[in-house]
Image 1: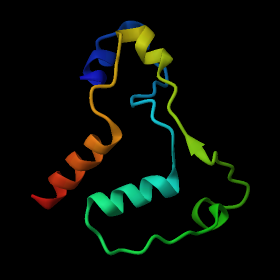
Image 2 (image 1 turned 90 degrees about the horizontal axis):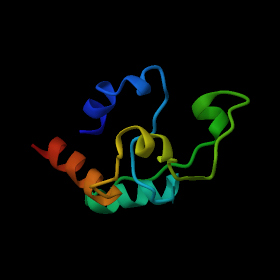
Image 3 (image 1 turned 180 degrees about the horizontal axis):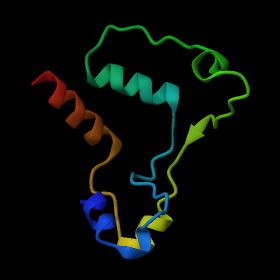
Image 4 (image 1 turned 60 degrees about the vertical axis):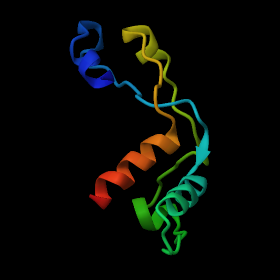
Length: 95
């Protein structure tokens, strides 16, 4: 819904817009959540950013999307929380 609404909004043209919730989470917490919800016995491997992305890459330890822009453009409010989104992806790949 959000992407379709953004496509119809002329003021959104050319802008970078975050679509998501406002739940703050670390990458490790996210990996643990996915592993638990998928009932996976996979190991979580921690690798240095340089190995994954190359030298000089910088990242934040925690992530929380800023959705002020999408709220202003189309009145967006998250309808599905992170756990719900993860569950829908798991369900899709199990089919």
